[in-house]
Image (tube, protein in one colour):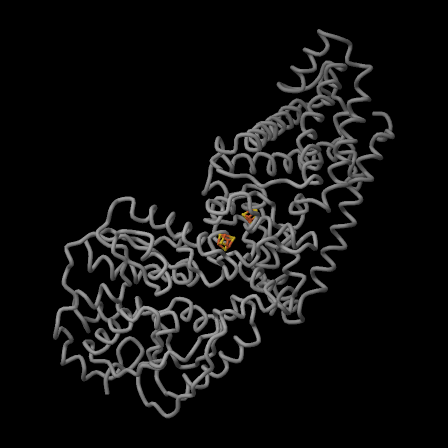
Length: 611
Ligand code: SF4
Ligand code: SF4
């Protein structure tokens, strides 16, 4: 074989070096920007089984795109064929060139342009050569089929199961064009070479054969390799400045996440890594209900990520409902909601949500604290229902915020007032613990989430009222009569997707109604979320109307939810009665159903129910 060099390889080498240097610099910055606690997690993770789990996840998500497949097989095929096919072309090209040269440390370009350096003799010198040519053609065909899907997706996204695709920036379009040209350019260069030498397999060999019928391919061999090298070089020059930065970034995110690193104010570089790992795939566009009601406005998470990545102010960031639908749809697992919350500085935009100060509570020796939450005070029907349920169960309970003067702090946090939120939290934590109660029940999923995630309440169990009611039913502390009606269930974002409370609301609803309600964690947002502090009322209404229409498509007798805010939001937009799960339970309570003999027991379900 002649020397393994030609000047055209310099183009590719220059572009690839830019990406390589950028990537090494970024990995250094991502690690250096972690808090010392997170760096220690990474250090310990490297020497644990999590390293292997991260490796498996990288193969299954970055190459095979398993999650995208499970959501949308056509889109999954497109991503898989491009990523896995390209990876295999690199891997097998490297094995083939190493096998033949015997040099493990040859320059990278040798395996990239291997067919140029070794077109393969007309009569193979080794039995394995046609095998390599066949496998390489097979993977090139796989990539080209994925490319076809990508082109269809760009111009007719519905054919691949997407209603919308990301609107590209000029630099992204340029990189996309380069990416689309890489594989046809490779096919032509390899086929031209095979045509000139009478080699190749079913794809490059056949095309080369056709070329040689029409013209003499030999003079075109070198120009086509120059073109291929130029296209590769263009793509790698652009990669660090475009959405394609996700290709090397996503595996780093997977490893760090597996080691336990999470988005936090202490580790800003991890947020940057999340933003770079976003592939702008656009899956979050269809998941976001604002796409329907704010057409043309770039409120969704892919645009938010892109703006932050480019150092710009994210558009419409105060319109986002923080419902989390985009986060649970995102196949990359970008921590969208925590990132959005960190980007909500105390700008004053959320000051309209200023809530009343705390009123201290002292010395209440009770077993159960009921915290209605300020939103529940706007829907008194839920409070009177909970009173009825508590009383009927025979519990010793205390209405902690009967005066409606307490806030859990989460609405302020969602509005960017983190300092005020943390002061409220500290005060409430002390008051809760001073009460001596073993159980805290709340009617508000917003309060429930922050109590669970951020409050330190040692020795105190926290339940949403749907869980509490479910336990009362299970332990026969209360009984309900069947309503004989049908119901649909709206999963509140903070309760279902946000806190993973799915089973208990389903159990309660199935015991009341003859509807097979099985919450999935994929619920629609009602539009009333406190997150969208800048959202126009008519946009909220449109979101609510759209969600109500979908939820009541089977004409249930009643629409059940488990959140005071959702109930208030749905009521004006649907003719079907809307009830909170507590109201429905209280409505069908069978009087005198609590079991006196059970009252003697002091501990049930981990907390005292009666003394
Ligand atoms: S946030 Fe996730 S779903 Fe949305 S574009 Fe980025 S990677 Fe895709
Ligand atoms: S959190 Fe909800 S409203 Fe905000 S971008 Fe995601 S899906 Fe849309």
